[in-house]
Image (cartoon, rainbow, N blue to C red):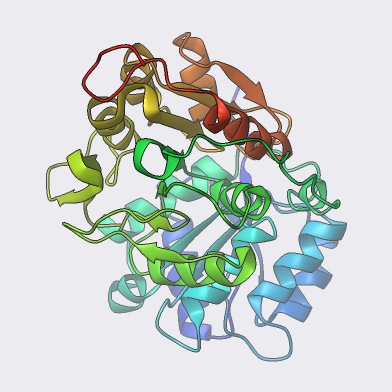
Length: 361
């Protein structure tokens, strides 16, 4: 039986860019461009008529931009959306990350496509993402299940030494930005330890992601820097061009090694470093994402005595990364996204079994 053609709707105000995207899509015999729109108004009108398997969406457009169009589509006609836009134009990166928060599945920088307009390294990456995302069945607006009033974490007693002893490490990919935001919103503002995040996102969009998370979560969020010291209550996000590890004395290290398991930055390397530097003082959280990044690192974190929490399938956009960790048998709790903050705080409230030197408390 021949595979069914995946139907693609292209939305961009630039005729040249629409043509570039169409040329790349049409090189794959399993894909078909079923329509083009020059702004968000047309996109919102065409989605229920054409029933595309994937919408390729620009951000900066007249009448209605890609962010507003994403909100409308995901609220009324949920459809997989790939943002292909310039990160450098008119807050493009931040606006793209806002679209991720409302259900777009991924972002890709458009500048290399504008230069070539033809398949190649860039076109191949675009086709890979199109084929992956077009397979997904987006049934409900991903943010809708996160927008109900969140339950605040319980006011639990915390050991006085938490700020020195503990760390929260997080890895996510496709569908991750909205899950990371939901987690950060539900953690208490006076968080007594640092949060370190690996979120797979295209180059050029990390700063926009950080600015969006900081604005929405109302807490300090920074891009991780080599040699910087972790501060309690601060969230650190790995840059897109380096691996991030946490090391002794609460320091961060960035390295330019090859991708690990196809990913750079790698959740596995972050979790493994937390296992080595923090042992039982580490908490690992694995959120929505495609593939299996993080699972092997969580295995090391669990073996070192740390706690592992995974987002459940019902609230994940893509269950790949949590599922891989669960199948390894290293997950302590599988929870919906709006219960993970409570679980993290309960773990932080538990007394440590050993001191740093390994002797009993």
